Image (cartoon, rainbow, N blue to C red; front, side, top):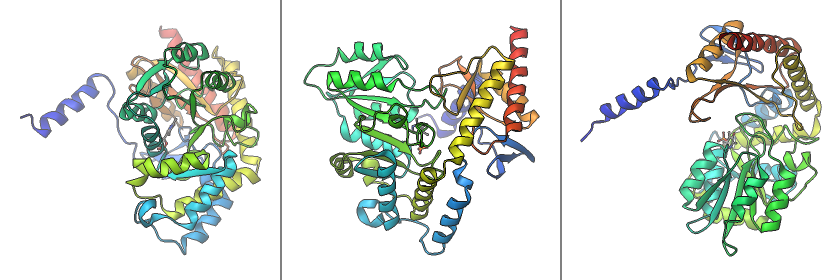
Length: 395
Ligand SMILES: *Cc1c(COP(=O)(O)O)cnc(C)c1O
């Protein structure tokens, strides 16, 4: 038999050959706006904490108070005895945020997608999936055993063409992100809903990056497009704008009850700690009460869009703005060099490579947050422009 060390050696060699070796960056310190890596303090443009709620005084104060009284762990699955007042309160708060009757909290967004899709879909069912969907959705779809049809990214015509292939009597789930995690593009929800309703398909929306960023008050994509209550299944994470850990489904009480019975990633995994629930609840209440972080985020987005337009031929004006911007580089090694140049200037950004994006489509991803200052946003745009014009000179 092949040994474990042979296997490990070949795994590492494969990654190296493709320029895809990954390392966990050794973060020494993190505050609202910066990360310290290898002794250098860098402006953090790679975080999903879009509103800075992980450092908001109201959230921190609530958590500090609760920490004095709460146990550190839920100690078992919700269904054994890991339930708590804090988790139930959080589910009430999520239902209010997402304007649904019910919600169900999972240990993470990844657990949520795996548990929900595998509970609802099985062999013989159909799942229609956007080509650019997140790994957690792809894994869930594969594990479910349903027949998968991929439609072109954000393309309602391709969605409809695929729906025509689904037998009338089949159960069909359409799955898409609303704000795409890699490039910040927004799904054309009005058209998608109209088509799903016409064909009788069920729509599941992954709101991981839309919660806290889209809509007048940050509730998400339904609020953005004035389509309250029209999606069958709303999924989200508590780990991004909601500044904690965990994932959720918002929908009808029948939906959450079915998932409580069938979602294996909920039933067989320890519930999130009560203190994480308190943090997420505090973030939701802050989001709904204090419009300042979302206003500041939108100012920063506009500033970045304007600065990039002034300096490059990249046009980031979109119908619906989000805090995520792709700087498309292409080559996997080149994107690492580009990120290193930005680190040199004091800015930390994410380098996305295969399999997060297709081979040869590597990119830097810029995530803006309410905590960034005008100066740092402007200066980042200037440094990115330099990288782009140098790339254009060389090619
Ligand atoms: C981050 C993310 C998830 C997973 O959420 P976690 O809470 O981090 O596990 C799911 N879907 C999308 C689109 C994401 O970006």
